[in-house]
Image (cartoon, rainbow, N blue to C red; front, side, top):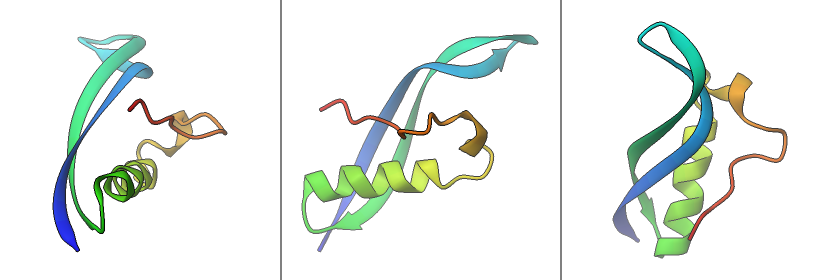
Length: 67
């Protein structure tokens, strides 16, 4: 197993900037241990989706990977 740094970017995510609600973009980094890069990306998305503060905003189909 190796350690990976996975950069995740999102677009049109419900959010608030300077007190105004609207769609926002974001980047975040997750460090994960996995057998390969593809598995690392999947694990990173799972950890992001599991964050309780973000759960109300995910569509029912879940986040898509944009390789």
